[in-house]
Amino acid sequence: MQCSNVEPQCARLCSRGDGHQRQLRIGLALPKDSDAFMPALSRVRPWVEKALEVAHLKNLIPRSEFDVCVIEGDTRCSMEHGLITAVDLMGRCCPHVFVGPTCELSLSSVARLVKLWQTPLITAGGLASDYTVDRTSPESEYFLLVRVGWSFRDIAAALVAFMDKHNWRKIMLIYDTFGYATVSGFQTCYLMMTSLVSLLKQKNITYSAYDTDKNKQNSIKENLMREMGVTYSSEYRQLPFCNIFF
Image (cartoon, rainbow, N blue to C red; front, side):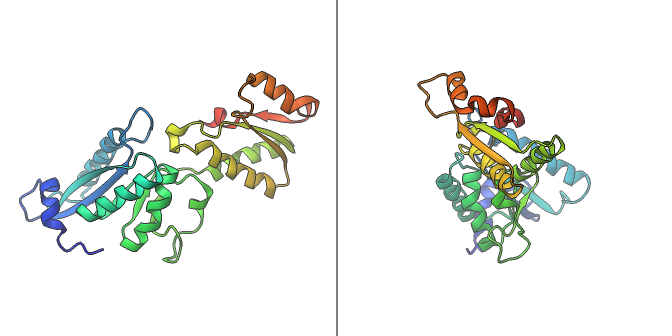
């Protein structure tokens, strides 16, 4: 995408200097709804601005040389709106770097585009196992994606290590497919379970999974008594995973 005409377009949104500074444009791509999602624009932008203040104080981004501007876009934590938001930000202001998306579905579409734009993307999301593969090669699917936090694979490894320590070889997983959507979107628990099950298979650990949406006409106690039965009640360890780690 050509960005040769971006300076006049962005001047209205960004310029705070005397016109002789170079612009450093940051595209902040996150959901606007702070009630539904934890990593919302209103919560993250102050921290981005705080980080910029530190960079100024340390002279990493000299104020005299750079006019830094942050342009927001609402991803709504969805794949479609994440893609639309990224394309809109790139078309309007051609950011030098994206901060976000963090929601897994929004990130999946945007992270595949940034390498075509040669624009790095920094995220505290990307928790699913797909984002933890090597990304140092330009041929990598998520090249230029920079993750700054933990991943579901890290949590799964910690849990399996705990099981190994206690010599647990059987486990029943109890989860809500759409639980904890505020953390990373509407498939947070499902993606976590996917990472955990993958590792359990590698370690030859026997497991069974129960989705709390199953047989909702019955109480959770009735469902678990039926699912667990005698076999699960003694040998199996019952770990309601998403209630432990989030």
